[in-house]
Image (cartoon, rainbow, N blue to C red; front, side, top):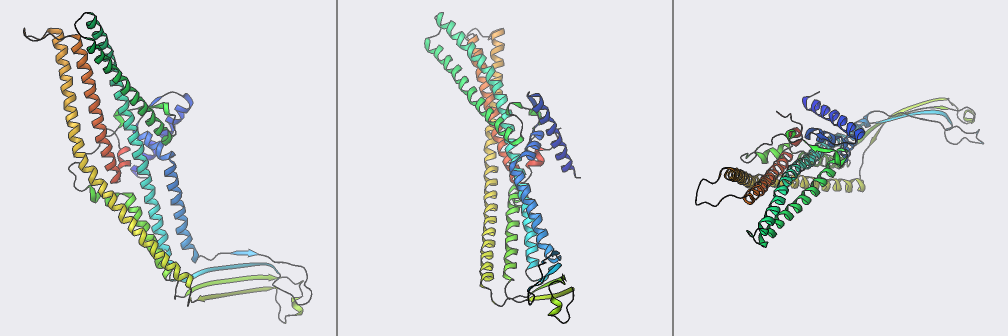
Length: 442
């Protein structure tokens, strides 16, 4: 068992234990990203359907190869004593066997079945990658929502204090009614953002519940379980990596090869001989007076032969060959389209990642500045400004600085989320998303 299989096995059983505990206790518990992904891969209908396609393709390979293995059929056709000349063969029982000896088309059909199996296996890998991406994006989004809600709680407290301060200042004649209205608008805006983030968090929990089979309310994310994402901004080999490693592209080309081999086989059904083998043993009944009409009647009868079939003209097979050739051509075109779409997407994501990185850096700097300004306000509020000409810092300034700091922190979270979403999409494109999700956290 490889290291990847061991990780998958451990993640599966860990997820099953978590699911069992949650199902029995009915309480929320923290779940890691790798456990969530492991459960999603086990419960996803998309993955199960792709696995069923692999089983069907495996059976297709066996079916294409087993035509060379003789089958064995037994039966009986006993009847009452005949009147006059006996009709048919009233065998007590018979054994029949037949098989294909050689066909010019069958090797192509076997190669087509093997290519179809490879395509199904790659499609399964592609489905696993997509489910891993969906689960990871929902998990990261929920983790970001959770941190934003915590920040909004702090901002809401500051906004309510600001409203209270503005109301006192209004009564004292220091500020106008407009200043109080502005503070109330700030508090209302925080409420709206909280409702929006809570709705989004509920959507992500529901999505994770559908993927993993766990109850929606049970999800508590663990930020430390999210592995660091690679920086693709300066990687110029991503396009080549996507062509070489993307399971969807490889599955499309394997499917095109299967269709091409199938068309070769259908073409060889015309004008080429086919060799088959057959044998039969029958035990004839003695009560149908065969011995009265046949001079050398025998109860035991056996025959074997090699059958040679030469198709001189078969319009149906010729039309089938043209149809298969057209299907193969279309499959090749679709594979080329899949490759072009994926490479274009990779280039677009890689270029947008540079801009998102710059926006993230700006958001982090603005967040840092807001935190420093808050610290300055708190220091001046405690110790004074140190300047006789400077206006004194008030509690109103403190609350405004706290609100500003939380807003800049939320902006930094959103910017980071945009970056990681793009990075995960790139990991999906190069076929490395599942290994990333299951990678150990240092």
